[in-house]
Length: 213
Image (cartoon, rainbow, N blue to C red; front, side, top):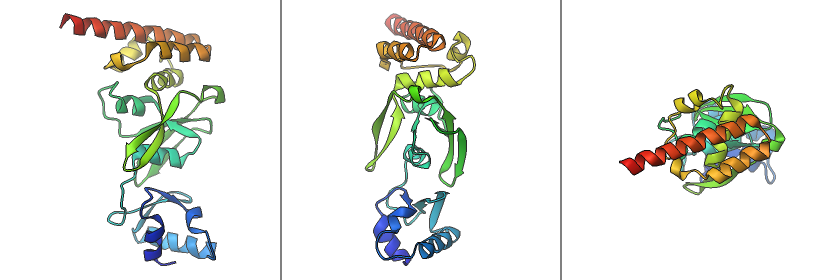
């Protein structure tokens, strides 16, 4: 396979796996050698074993970080500070994409950025949805309510008023407080129930401030 043929196959793909190139009468060993050469020459970017992206200027669409996060670890969704920043619930820009997974925790440092994965129990793998990201890309991302509770769940002392205050939560009127309480109740976790109550109080305080203004 030459590079022109590769572009014909993957030009519209933000990222691609080796398996996409193995259809038909091809030699898998030759394909892998070519991928290695193109990576060394800077034509493609290796994100992990078997997962690649075209390098500029060959890429037609720039891969969205949330999509890359989903592809690096399939059994995962974007959550915690990354999702909260996406929903404008915290003021900070978050350069590292954090996801949760039922698999082992880990970190991937790639040419497209750094990606963290936190472990959660299988019965807590809920509260996420497939979101369009533009450019025909999409990714699994926690709902705003689940992103908050994931952060509380994973962070020691995450249910303390001091910690929740340090997050500088904003736009709390966009939260579904009933859904927040429902998720906390489903987890049967006193920690998450306490956090949900504190967040509801913060939302009421924010609403009162806007009323005064």
